[in-house]
Amino acid sequence: MVKITRLHGNAQRTALRQLLHHPPNEYDSFANFVFFHEAQLRPALRELVSDPIVGAHAVYLLGLVADEGDLRLIIRQPPKLRRGFNQWAYYVATALLNSRTEEEWAFLKRCVLQKFQDPWSVRGAIQTLRLMASQRSISVLEELGTDNPRWRREIGRALQYARSEPLPLSATSIPELMGRVSAVTTAGRWIATGEPRFNRAADKALVDVLYSSGPDRYTYTATLHRVGDQWRICALREVAQALIAPAPVSSGQQ
Image (tube, rainbow, N blue to C red; front, top):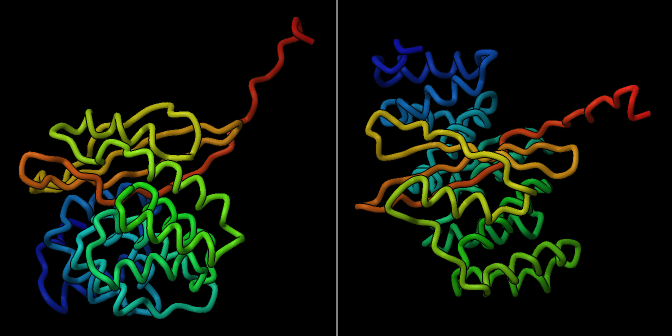
């Protein structure tokens, strides 16, 4: 895979497309590799977004990096996938925590209004609007709560949090920032926070957070960008769910 980072132009795009078409079994390790080399690989990934075969993979990886320019490109030129395969919208919605343009706000609204016919994108957009906790996001949630009765309960909870004036999702240190993040999702009880995985320039990082809810275990990945002396959360998405089997009952407890 390292050879791909040394290629350029069409050669790199072709090699990366082949790899995305038949990704390694250890996909998490592959995603971490792409994140580490994001500066070298993002141009090729951007060109592959429109590919009907590997476009969803390209969006997944670009959403993990959460570069604003990449996200806007995807919104303007979304992947051309078969009907019903729209989870790519979730990857974008959960990476718009620093939305500034009208097209980004419009995209979040479309997600909540189920324009992509994918419940994941609805949840992701509501989560993003909730965590932004700005006057604009509160206004959008209030509007959407009226237009989308099916998700009114989730939107109501998001509004309650957004109106509580929470601490900003930025801090001078990653441990301080992740301490805030661990308490703000609705996934369940916080269990553990992983170690940061940096890109080559060390100005972006991925951090996993593990939660439990009953027998379920959820893993979320946060994307952090360093801006000046601050680390800022730019994306937060669920990446894994597991069912934990109950502990066996010993004969003395029966």
